[in-house]
Length: 161
Image 1 (tube, one colour):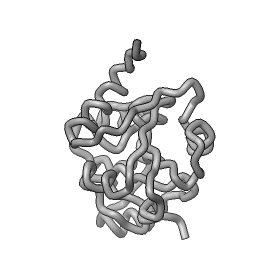
Image 2: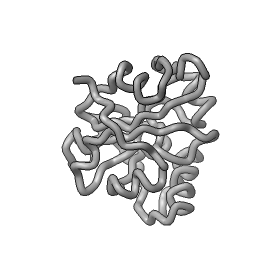
Image 3: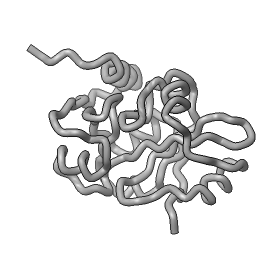
Image 4: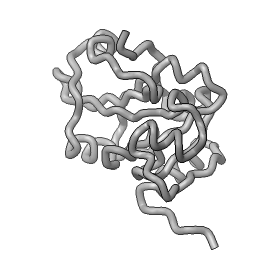
């Protein structure tokens, strides 16, 4: 009998299915909260892990989700130039309110509200990447092309130089 997925993980699974993706959501015994933990748990390189970083835009107060390769750091200066306003890291309450998910498990889709998304161009170098699936120990595998398609995210150079 299959394990019952948590509510947050179930929402991600449903969002994936609604987008036509049949990828399996894996809930792991090990934590996938950090890129290093996730890579060790699924057996891939750290660069193939999609870090979901939520920022708060300075002027509008809107969220910005940046999907970053596990080996990269997002550059707030580059993000600000891309979106046309200042950006700052969002706190845990803002992340949960705007995405419906807790930090450490924010997926690239299935959010409570519409969120603008930027995708690190370095993720496109891989045939598959692994993204958070709604909890700190749940992930799913996806091609970068499908990731862009299902999120509507804009591919950009977002990393610290």
